[in-house]
Amino acid sequence: MPPADRPRRTDYGFHAPITTRWSDNDIYGHINNVVYYSYFDTAANLVLIGAGLDIANATVIGLVVESRCQYHAPLAYPTPLVAGVRVDKLGNRAVTYGIGIFAEGEDLAAAHGHFVHVFVDRATRAPVAIPERLRTALAALVR
Image (cartoon, rainbow, N blue to C red):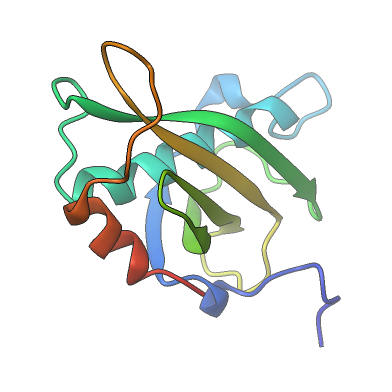
């Protein structure tokens, strides 16, 4: 049984491959901690794009207001990765994603955390309700 704070792949309803790059590694020979936040951003945006968000032209966009990551096991280029995404909290204007990063073929997360988007009007940056199309897709991932 894994520690309670180390999620399994089955804890996430959406999965996406992540390709590591040579530049992801640091001098210690593993993927640098800051790169995981890029993976989180990629995974959350893949969910939104899959739900129909036109990230280049939409009038409503998600801005990151909070993120956190816990590290459990080192990963290194060229290991293929999988990001798992779920929705831990779905509000009127914000969503908290739970995201796990897994080495391909592994059941236990090498890292996991959360990522919070607040939805805003692109021009004014004023908070707005999550568009219904996105809300429906996010609701399907609620844990």
